[in-house]
Image (cartoon, rainbow, N blue to C red; front, top):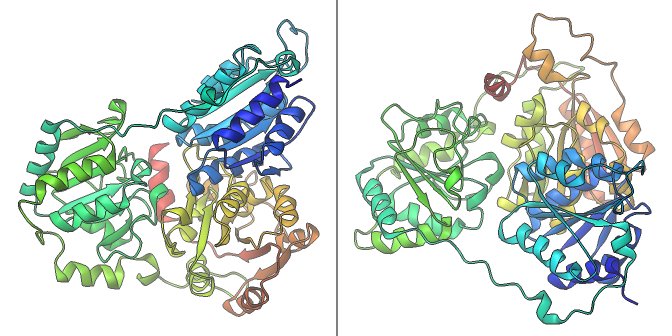
Length: 546
């Protein structure tokens, strides 16, 4: 007999799930083993929240659907913060969770799982019966992949145990996703705006990560500079006219060039308060265009001159086909701009005062040194907090699959799980985590997962023995609730089976150099005792929105 649990696992395996993550309890025991028997790799986490972040990061960094598997009720609620981040980020992720059986109103595990899923912005789906099990699973998968949504698929215990109805290969066929093509009038209007502009800038976001070649080709023809939102960082790495991240993480030069643009075209980017510094990066006479597959995204954060509903790659191609009659133009791509970008578009090339002491190292000095020390082929994952601009702006990444930035829900503690998921998605690269001490301690149970997986994960912990964001935001208030005794995170790392070093000065990084040379199959925890910067520049921008 093939049970529904087995049918669900087989179906997902045949549809092509990339990896599954979870914590196994009685409710999802058979579901998880069915996935494993189907050939889906499975990583057992120490907490469902960590598993959710692993799945989220894996999907972002691999381009494949990831599965989170949880026990009913408490297993799902443990995963909620990570799932909320994924849902707000429009990560294609499928959470397969057990549910209490119909009528089990007195079960301690019973909650409104569908209502919970909808409340965090996920799509609620469920397997309704043995007869519909395969169709329900295919529908959930299709929604996650084609609509780029986080889907919670509940599978009640009584349905799981029932015999599944026979199904055929045809039941698993998926129609290919069709790229939305912009209408001709919108293409013409965008061409007209690009023709009239003298200083155009393209800002690419999450929805344009698949359109790198098309956007670079169009920008080269129409003389536009290139920038990204934080989540798309690395998309234009290596391009001579790449400004890097637009927004709070922009270097002074990049911010100036974006602010001086007379046309900003947002590709798959909603131009939120972070990306545009609360509108400060948009000049008073600047025209703004948004290209997105969703009508609701157009003009959602600020007034726009033109909204184009269309797939970014398809739209750029259509515009380019019309533009070719005009030939390439220089516009913003002057030799002077290229030279300025080469010399000082990066924060690491921007002079700053060294705040280091004998006991604490300036986080900018630390980050610049680690950027030189760590291999170029890396995948950098970022937790949230006052520290986060240092690894985001100082550690270079090779491309859009080298930077995992989970900040849509602004929760600390997601970084370690994200780093593990990203490492599994990009096994040929050195995984690097940038975290504060608060977020790292919140998620430290997953360090055992990284050790067990033998990941050479470099954990850079910017340790200020505090919740630094609150210390710097509430400058003149009582900080007793947000300051803590200094913790020896290197020793904690060694206790989990990782390597650990304490860094107070640049000389202490010699231990990191030795570790890299030895290349052991285990994580390294760098407990960096950092000097206070008095409140990071990006933090000041962020708190304007609170």
